[in-house]
Length: 141
Image (cartoon, rainbow, N blue to C red; front, side, top):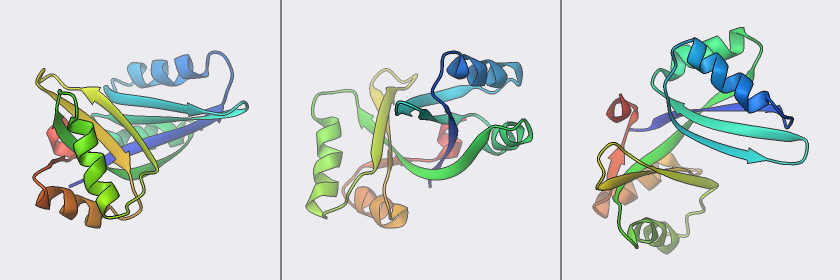
């Protein structure tokens, strides 16, 4: 029911993003989505990959500081207002979103929205009840 996201923590300096993406490429890891949040000193690279558990092990075994987080993915039409519909459902229940990112899928008619909330089970049930399609890790394979 959820998507496994890996967060990689690293110093914010030139070449680090190239290092982690090259490492993943060398290990035949397919990045499905990527989001970068940074500050002046450190950054968090959030990735969704084809093989999250193997990727997490590879990263940790090679001294990358990282963790696995469960996030919610929803399929939304690639039309104006689709994201607003989901956000309004959450707002109506006073649910706070910690972060969000979206990307287009191979299906040109839809986008995938990834977000982090405090209570994944509650939010997934609420969205399903309101006709929103939940995407899980297997859907990304």
